[in-house]
Structures are given as structure tokens and as C-alpha cells.
Amino acid sequence: MTDTVEKIAKKAGRLSPEQQDKILEFVETFEPSQRTLHDIWIEISKDMPEDIFADIPTDASYNLNHYLYGSAKK
Image (cartoon, rainbow, N blue to C red; front, side):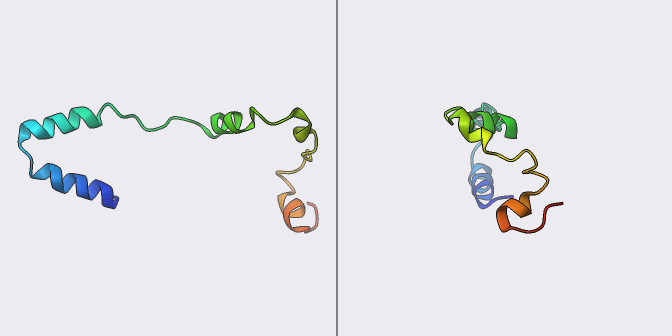
């Protein structure tokens, strides 16, 4: 549990049941982000020029250490 969650729980514990119900109703309106890594990539890359992608080696994921650090290719 994070420090923030602990603070909320401590403060909520001192409230009346009716106030706690209102807080619960409010919190339930929030949903965690359901964005996938793919969604994030699409959002980031949408403004990139197409020629940037032409320069990415086709084996970049397999030989990442080679491209980052110069180690031997696999």
C-alpha cells in the first residue's frame, strides 16, 4: 500500500459511514488506465516522419546490445 493510500484510509476511517459511502462512490468513478504498450507506441510515433522507421535495423530487438554497446551480433 502506498503512503497516499494509507493517508486516505486513515482519514476515511474517521468519517461517518455516510461520508465513507460518498468517498467510495467518488473513488469508484475512476478506472485505471487500460492503455497497452502498443497504444502508447502509436501515440508517441504518430508524429514521427516515416523515414525514421526505415533506419531501424530489422534485427534491432534481437541484437540490441550490438546496436547500443557494440557487442558482437547474435
